[in-house]
Image (cartoon, rainbow, N blue to C red; front, side):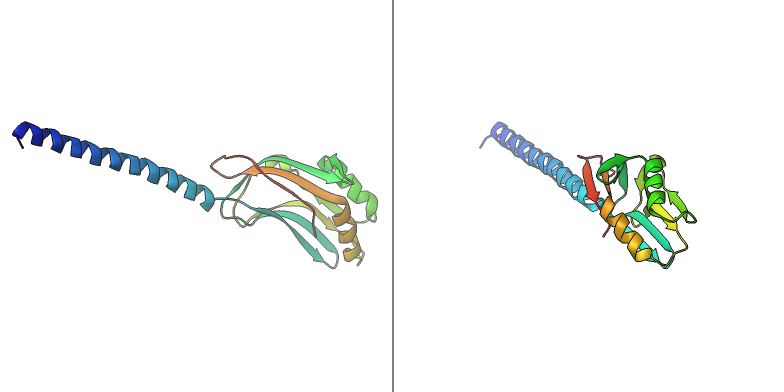
Length: 162
């Protein structure tokens, strides 16, 4: 083997090794990004808190990453309703001396991991909280469009309280 042939083959071997290393680096970056997307995936669920004269419905992020809320729609009796209409619907099925609060979800864009937002909170004087939660659970549901911090394809959550 001549000096020129040796130089040619060593250059080619170096080029092949460098190309393989570059390809593996890009592949590793792709795999790492896919793993990171799964590592910050949010998951939403309803959390209902009932006490003797207290009813609260929250939307909780129980995933492993923050949930970026894109759309939020309340439904009552299978009709899309605003927060004001939802509040009026709750007032219509409750006694007049109760205190009510409906969350305005327009201000909430991110739900951190383990945190929640209050959708509706009702304090009432009767002890019939179980009946209230049954009525509300059968007539209310929500549709939420959200994504993770990677802003991938929008996830959705549609559910009703149990």
